[in-house]
Length: 344
Image 1 (tube, rainbow, N blue to C red):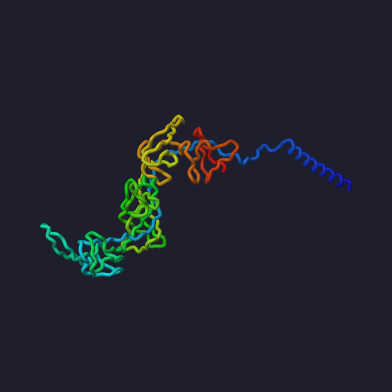
Image 2: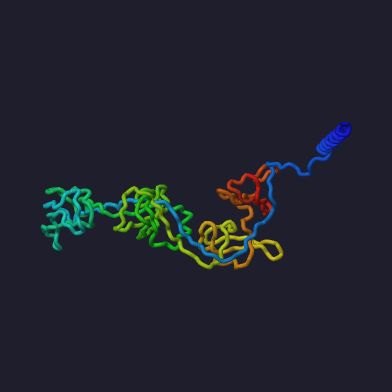
């Protein structure tokens, strides 16, 4: 019994000594790892480089469009006179060349003598006779409209952001259209890019709602569509294969000409003008000014932030405050250095 008591006393002394040692460690020897301040940006200052290589750039532009019926075709009177006969009624389908009305007119011959003539007005297009203002015994003037025909054809229209016109220097002749809830994608022909002249307003003539550039193309006759349907329009802007390409983030300027920052063998940098070609929004073709294998800065020094992340320009970093980056990205400091992995 005595032995048991002495063993227990020794065990208690060991436990008490261990506890005391732990308290001394906590009080006088704290953990060397400092707590992380979430308000401070992390990561290392680096300068991301990009090695120039070859690639393929496909320059398709995707836009929203609307299906609309083709404009009505006016029917002009061919002579001044009196409507003698009317052969059709409003709402009737007529084929191109169908006789519509007959006019008894009076004209002067070469000698100035009045002559009575008879002229038959025919349909200038196939479609529904949507209006007919000519009545028997009514007077009409040469060239004045006596009705109009609504053709059974349709077209697709849509607005084009002006900056995307740079991608359409080589104008296509057709586009691929997918009607929402409609048939399989089809080729929309007679493709046009319409730019309003000074003083023109949007609305008529296929112009965009804001009066800016717009597209228009014809729906094939064998494709069933209805006015008001929405559609996706893919405009082929071209493709460049096995060409020198660089990220768009590395180029100051995105159309025709630009400037990149080249990394020199000694570690220094220089700005260099380049000629640009096709771009898909992420990569851009460099026609001249750079060669495969050269190294450039991946981000333009001091470039502003792009939506959804990217490069944040200098002058926004405040000591002791987090660096806001929507969607992640990098921060370019005033000296051109880059912070990656910054906290949001």
